[in-house]
Image (tube, rainbow, N blue to C red):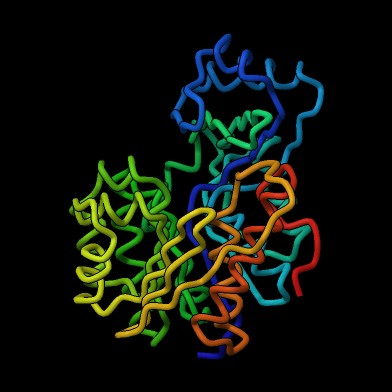
Length: 324
């Protein structure tokens, strides 16, 4: 089949609502600094109102994998996204937000039930982000939402670990991976969160062992996946699966393990860290876009570092300045 996209992502379609706050705000609203809590619709509406009162709220169509697809598009490559939204105002703004940055998004919205997802992101002066997420319609993803022809026409299928919390979504991941592999395409997975790994460790291992070509994770996530405190041990275990590893380590940069080679990739310098939201998402965007344009794994990792450095220098999880 003719290649239509460089990368297609599947994940939670979420409206990011971002606001700078004080540490006192977190205490007042009982938010655990640096954490990610799942909340219900009532809590989401209350926090939305509280953040809006802070006066500097941004609303950006997002979700982890969606942010990566936006970054890939910003680098001049072709991307598409599959995620569930409701037929409501937030869902329509999400769809338009993807269209505005040339990310193909055409999943049909649900007509009744849960509202579209949103993530309240409170950013303290030290750049740390605290997230409270209402998954809403995004968590209703099933194998029926898989766009077979689009997956077959993408060089790489990129799966977001956050979506793994629902059993139908797990089945959708496996089905999408099988479609991609049957078409001779690659499958990439981001583990998303160490707590997510802890909840679904065996399912993630099965996915990596049987369906994944490229794994994105930070150091804590891959250590959790293999239940070890040694990164070398975790990488050795991953090597046995013949999966390429792209492991981020914050200010230490990243490690890319390609077959028998481990490439040390330095972090790109940043004058001031403003907001770490989306650093891993944009690192993945740089790596996948780099591979799409023919870069080596190490050079693709360097592009990923540049993309991560750009996004943490301002508020929000999308790139704002050209990288290349």
